[in-house]
Length: 112
Length: 112
Image (cartoon, rainbow over all chains, first blue to last red; front, side):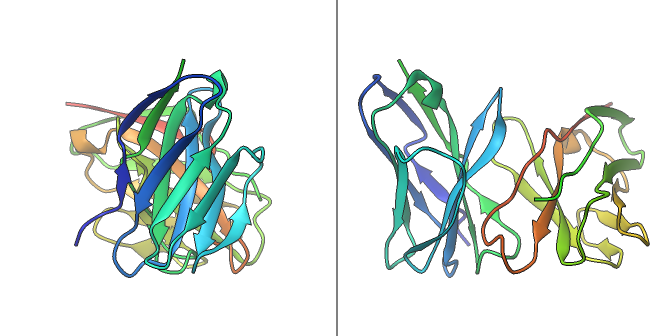
């Protein structure tokens, strides 16, 4: 079956702009989580959505937000981009959020 | 979240067994022990998880100490494809939906 698909794979944005990243989970998976990976901080949890509701949240500012649609696809939005937001953004899906997670290839965001 | 401690790096030769240790002295009774690995330029990949008993799957084995304060991921015959960063993660049962707290992990180098 198809894996987790993230689009776009690469993105370059300017400081102050906003960006929307997309994640399509594995068919049948209802939980979608988002992570930020940087060389300095490693992999950090952003938030998790289940059945269109945010169920868990990490320690990121309100500029980072997300949503989930009825088909379980999820989007993540970052407003007022800062240079420090440059990172690899990873999405993971799982059946209910408490079992093994399957990660996508990620979206590489560069803020200039 | 309870913390884990792993060596920064380990080396192995191809076709030899590899034992990757993880200490988690503050583990609680409901914490599951998960292992993920991340190959270069890819998202993390689920390896194995367990609660109290040793576990085996097609990728690896997980040996859990009787007091659960440590565990060891065993790769029975390392291949070059196993070169990756290995993360040992504690996941609270029933409360940390979708959330994986990654540490720095162990960088495994496999020599031909």
